[in-house]
Image (cartoon, rainbow, N blue to C red; front, top):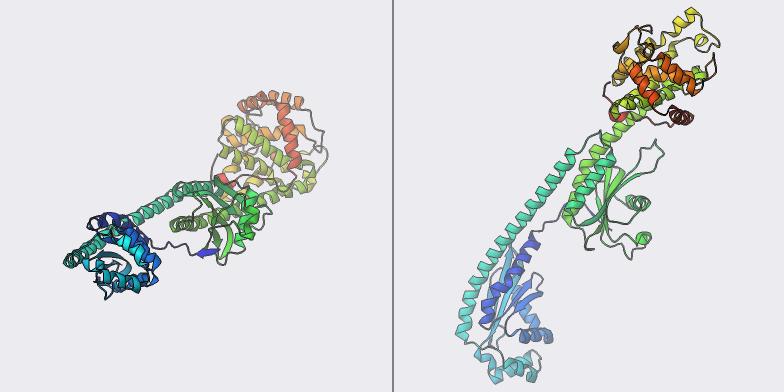
Length: 567
Ligand SMILES: [Fe+2]
């Protein structure tokens, strides 16, 4: 397992060497035609490319004679000191060597080496001594040497002089081209990175769920890298006993459970938050044997807050099974760092939402605790209110606010004496007057909470009547806020169809008839019409089922996404 700080290594050297290698055949071609053997050596004095009519001869010499090879490398290494070297291979004469250094930012990066044979080499005595000196088979090399081009010594000296200049110009031109290519690719990557960060940043909004944002992020990464798949794992807050959430994009055949297992395995080994972990080959590593069917290599970048890892981005498998590029890791790191702050904000927002929801449930539960006979009434009115709001064509966000208003509509009953609230039998006039205070008390309780200011009309006005004979304000018709009319209808239906202290629950058909009868006088006729036009029996069954579940303290209210909306 190797770790990287996420910084890309410079690719300038690799680019320049690639450019020189690509330009070598063209540069070498005229020298080859003149009968010289021309070769390109890297900075470690390893032969990487050669050309010329006598290639077989020179390669055989290098291969068969360590002494010859060492001598050639010695000359090449000497040129690495910075200046061209033109010399005979050894005192025997007849073998001219021209070595010119390749420099990259004042650093030796290899050399161009040319060899040619003069007439002297073919002198029988010289050749014999050459073969003896370099311990090569005289008969075999005599046959090969007979086919080699021969030069006059003064020709080789002239070639050497021209070649030194030619090699210098080649080095400068290819180096410049390498620099341009390098700059160009750096610019392209910087542009890609900036563009990617801009696109991802533009999509960040606390109103969007992190999963949506992370999916977009993975899609973006997939589009600009050669990685086969991306996955993001987010651990839930400690107070929620839920599983980590997983987002997957791409063509990696892993289940969410596989992804979480890999995440946990790597997270536990990650030495530092903010440091990428790259595993270029998982095959053969017992630690990843369980994932052998789908995992070949991966990179992991943790998402962390205050050095505490709470998730991570996984790049899974490379398209050609090659290693991840440094710039791919850099992209992942940049997006992870940018996303961390966003996810942190969303989680803070979720924390607030959970706190708020918990407080509302505590309030509603406190009413139920006072008056067990109406237990679940608030939740059912909330559910029915949302049903009616949906029928009325209100947007989803506003329907959620209706739900919240229904949930809180009787919160003012906290301020009503238990002797009145829990009385079995009919209320006296004074008791009824006391009971009628609950909408105002509820509105008063919530007026200090700006986040729920928009739902207060549903609380204050759910006992108004269309004919103006309701309370507390005696509003009539459309003077009554829509929220109040919706909650009023929902409240009436649930009150009729559930047991009360003073009477038994009425059948659905009777409640339907009563709503029809009160339409226009007590209830909004349009809302009543919409409500009765649906299959009320089916709705009632759903409501009953919901009511049975609503005693569950984990009841979920999706209010966070619409905080701030008004109705
Ligand atoms: Fe009420």
